Length: 302
Image (cartoon, rainbow, N blue to C red; front, side, top):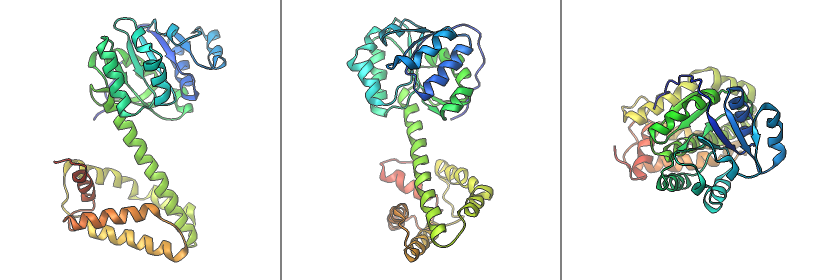
């Protein structure tokens, strides 16, 4: 995966924009400021009205926003997208050749379904979920993970350029973008849970959580993601630190937690996975071999 260079293009694009939540409002403003022609629809009309004074056309229905070259959806979840585009029939109303650019995060199954639904009618579907928060969207500094037919993705590039600081094009199958975004958020969820457990452990043992945070954010800890990630991707499990010693560290954490009354459910699960990987013969391989064990359990072969 690599960041694809995006060249700013000056051509005015006719855009339908559906979904003006906190993220969508900042994105719509960027597109208007970039000189594009926007037709806006939001279920709650009040969110769309301020854009009228900025030159946008505000319409009464989602169907009225479809007469465009690119229709961007920024809806809350799978249910909202499916209700509008499948049950509501919007997929059958697109003009010939119009691109549906979905920038919200939806599940892989729905992404596959949407791509097939549009392909059957000859309309390209591009999935481009965004990474960032509302204030980042307003600044045009989102990270964008995009996938879809190459020609359609290329048509969306000037829009990506306005909305994001970086765009990662991860393939031509739209669901690949959903998978990358979901996997990234899963990793973030794991980080939040494990960081919360680690901070609780430090505090219950009498440590200073601010100093602990300084240790993990200013030492070499941040490089471990790249180190272990590269080993997993490349299949290099020559031991720098064997997995069996990783188990020792997990058990020490559980021991400390038990001694001061802290629950570490993530550590309990990790211990089980380490024991299973050691039983399967990975104990003397590098700690990163836990990723290989997980992959094999998922039916993946190198």
